[in-house]
Image (cartoon, rainbow, N blue to C red; front, top):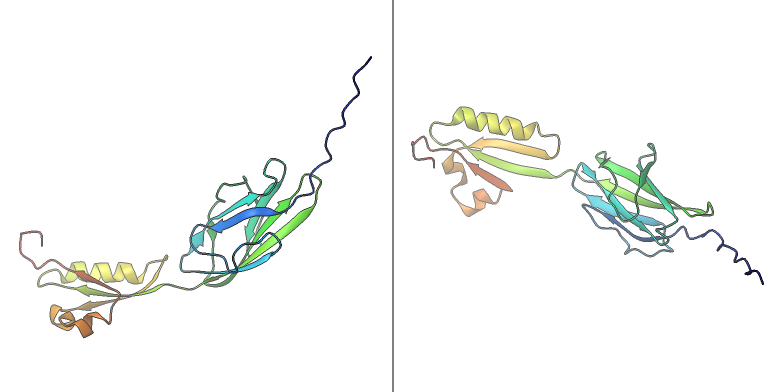
Amino acid sequence: CAPTPVAPPPPSADADLASPSLAKGSLYPVFDRATTQYEATLRVASTTVTATASDSANATIEVRVNGGAWAEVESGQPSGTLVLNTGDNTIEVLVTADDGTQKTYGIDAARVPLVLRVAVENGSSSIASADALAAQLNDDSWYDCTAVIVTGSAIDTADELAGYDVVVFGDSGAKDND
């Protein structure tokens, strides 16, 4: 008697994500497979997306930002770097099931520039170094900084210090590496 052949299971139609996440930022609302549209606020110039498919053995995942080219992502692994514009961005995650069923999840990601108010205290003999540091901070492409050169007396009270997010103290000019 010959064995009865067993038919292979039909291809999966599961195009759901089990869990998407951003490397820097949180999704709103909290993830639910049935919800396909999310929001996120980010203070960085780029991020990665980690997406895990429900049927990770058979589904494929692709991501893109702002209508760019799709890039395939291995289930459960971070995508390549997604460069974000200042302002509104659209990140899309496309899941294709084994049978060809597709589902797209959208993330409206608002990139809010991080503005740091930096006081660079110039010390008594390091004015050139303070100028160079302030210029570098003001020209930074990752963060929006407003760096100003100040004297120690301009930041010697709590109220004056409260006007800055970061204070960088320069060298006093002494040879003791302070």
